[in-house]
Length: 381
Image 1 (cartoon, rainbow, N blue to C red):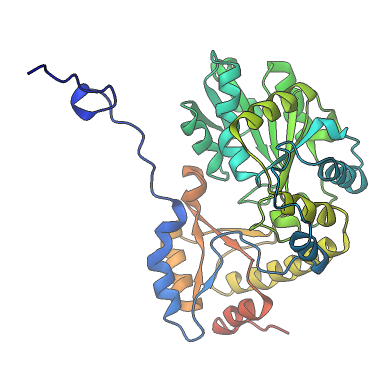
Image 2 (tube, rainbow, N blue to C red; image 1 turned 180 degrees about the vertical axis):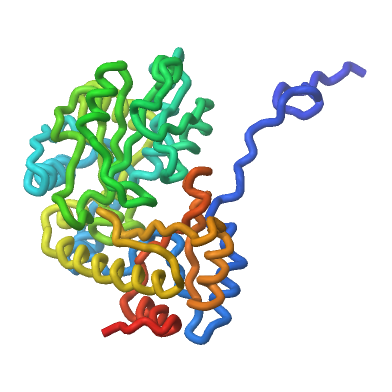
């Protein structure tokens, strides 16, 4: 009998080869025990762990989604002309930035863009293998590097980035307003750093409409060269389930990414693109949503302070980033579940340097947050 040669992918082919990639536990799946504790209270759990919107999108947006007649054909991967013009018009109207619609393209929400862009960039620059990202941040920046076979290197500030890491950098992520801290980044400095080092700067700006003391800012205000800004309707228009976003900036980078993504078949569904046109054209619902989130931040900050947790309203975004009094974030999360029926995210989800904090996403209706306040004896009037 002729011996069978094992296939290269089989375990017997290379018994001493390194193990392949195994996805780590998804962070928010680790909260199931906390949910059970919180759900035991009368009225049930109030889940403030994930930043998923709870308020309705405008009726006109839903009508456009249902009545677009765009469901039969394949939608343009880069976005319909109407989509791109609406997104460019929003940038100009709200932030005073003029971007040619041809230097802007659609993406399927922005999480897939965050996770996938390092892979696409590495295909173009295989000699670079490092993704730089903020040391306390949305976990997908680091995971995107891992999925691309890159080094994920966190930085505290631009001056702390080591020269060897800058030389190997494929891209640098900035996130302003920041998840989870609500901080505002010096985007001009980030753009200048990237141009000085020849490193593309990717600016995740999905919370741009929710700033509390200053107007929203985009890195595109400092010119498009070497930068790409990512924007989403998930937070702005309560359309997280529709998966509609776009990226805009450097014509060469946007052109390259859009061509690669065409080949990979990334497309925002046609009905979603039609709804996005309506959403980008309406600012009133965003202003109303901003007022809701500010009220909810103030209410939950008071609730946290009632437990002896120092907690202030952040400069932007709809998260509270609160330090556990004794530095034990999981203990604080368990206390919040047991006493207030609230599920929050321990800060280690956003990097080791966040391990002493919890993130509270004020994304439940007012009556649910008032329930939390009453459980803690906090006035709601």
